[in-house]
Image 1: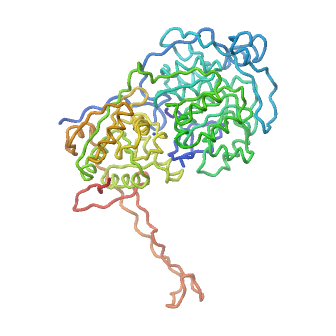
Image 2: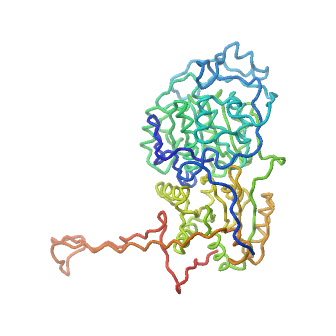
Length: 595
């Protein structure tokens, strides 16, 4: 998923209180921020197009064959004039619409009811005409227009250089645009954000209900704040083309601006479950007008313990609304969500055994000890391309980012202890190319959706295979290539081997690896120039009062004194995007050993 807003983008009707500017990604943690002898080789793939180096809608390069448009699929839920977002269709719930359904779905059709005022119980909204489950998809290499995407949205995609659907988009769009509930399963970076953004925007824009304060008509649930903001970056240009208003809601920031945006009226709401439930309890909004609900990365919501809240939120939406769920796996209770809330869903997967594997190579670098590991990690971080280094703890991530910066390799960290502004600042520095190295924890893995990450390094191997796959998915996105490296200490070899078997990954094994090993030199590629870290700021000068302090005067200015002592710790170190400087020992830069 790649953000799509251009620099300086302005949308007069858009309220987006959750982040500083459209398309700007926020770094994250759980509960809204707070799983993988030779000369240097030439790196694969070209640069994507988009905001601050983040890439276009889909990222660089289009790949894979696509299926064609479905024949005989149902049209939008109401009649529209020519040139509007959807072709004409019989009114939902009418006899004409009902007879167009297959028998199994005719029996489930709910009669049309007028839009009701907000209430405590979720009403039933009319079901949508749907294509039969046996409908065939005609042809291959279909365009977005041939798949049924309305012309204004096709134009918005083309304006961003997106002209050919990815497989997950070609597979799901005929059904989602027709109003069917869909379960989509695809690898990270497969293009699923556009796959659900298009039907979300098209169907809400074609719906009969007007915009109302505190009553969104489209809802996207995401597990982390950074993912929510990056989804918004993809949805916003499409919504603008359709005349819709969006906003983003997540925790970790004051809710005032979010409440104001809801009160002004929004059509599409992108939210994290925790803050959304908080606002529902405060009666700042209602979900009884939601026509389309999307659950993105449902498996990650399960990992973070959000499923009980997700169930409560889904129960607050109308029973007849369309629901789209995207998840890499169906374990940890995701299957319960599918069975309970999706009606006769169609399943589309691009992760089948017959699907070609992504252009990703895996390497296990076995090192002798912590010192060798430190040297290998520093060398791998020194390349010119974007790379993400993963550690298990927030403390180690922060420490490594500072050590790399002190060694002349500008790096930023991303983990749950950062403030919202720091997350935005660090991720912007990484996506814009100002800094090439991101040091992150597992909890932030899903929030890094940046194209052209050429190398992922598991500095600390993950403990389970799903985290490995999620971490590794930061590279080889949108059809481009990438390398994944796991640095393995002797005592970790057995558990790493077991974890890779569970992930069904075949990694190239490299024994007795050092920083001078050919494989390390090859994976590093061209080495970036050394960047001298900024020196720390000098300490602030002591503040002086108008009269000398007597020896018996109190620090608080008792006995008539002003008590203006110097503050301690007034100076701040200045480094790349907020990281601190470091010291040199013996005139040679080297990272501190760590395990």
